Amino acid sequence: AQSVTQLGSHVSVSEGALVLLRCNYSSSVPPYLFWYVQYPNQGLQLLLKYTSAATLVKGINGFEAEFKKSETSFHLTKPSAHMSDAAEYFCAVSPSGGYNKLIFGAGTRLAVHP
Amino acid sequence: DADVTQTPRNRITKTGKRIMLECSQTKGHDRMYWYRQDPGLGLRLIYYSFDVKDINKGEISDGYSVSRQAQAKFSLSLESAIPNQTALYFCATSGAGLAQETQYFGPGTRLLVL
Image 1 (cartoon, one colour):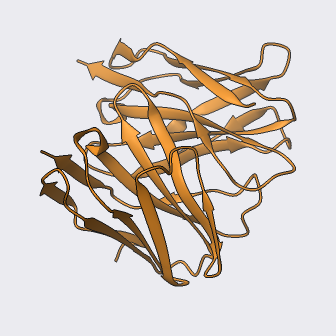
Image 2 (cartoon, rainbow over the protein chains, first blue to last red):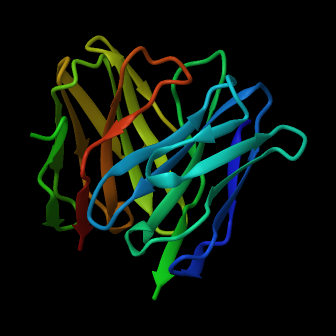
């Protein structure tokens, strides 16, 4: 069975500081991994995804994530937080070889303060 | 105009009532999905449809039913609403349905069952 664990339901950073949101996955087959962002009162929007092409994936708005098979991790980072990054972030896994059925983590709410 | 729309955006209903949430998409996608989001639980799949004639149960289908009226329309019904169905409901679509495909989400319907 596949599962996703996001460490920290709430993360708070200062504007300009490093953003690190943690995601660990469990999958019996090679996974595809996704990060989605949800801004207040909006649906989810894809930030980036790993589909086995390159382990370091760059996404929109300056975010990137690195797939580390040995650590079963796919942590999301951004070098310098901006106030507009305040949102909820979801990590999701989709097992390769199957249909597109996303399994989501519980989410991490990011707060950015001046 | 938004690619994936949901109606209504907010709904308050009473226990035992039947309600329908509607989703429409203009992306031309074959695959459509219904999720519910609960705080601390992330998103969980209720039903998904790979085409008009193919509907499948997701992780938490009990108490829900769906109808795929056309390629572009996918409705979710609560036959007899109960308070623990209070949640934020999202519709999503994807193209080929392969595991690495991006899902595109609607803005959500916030449902309160009294």
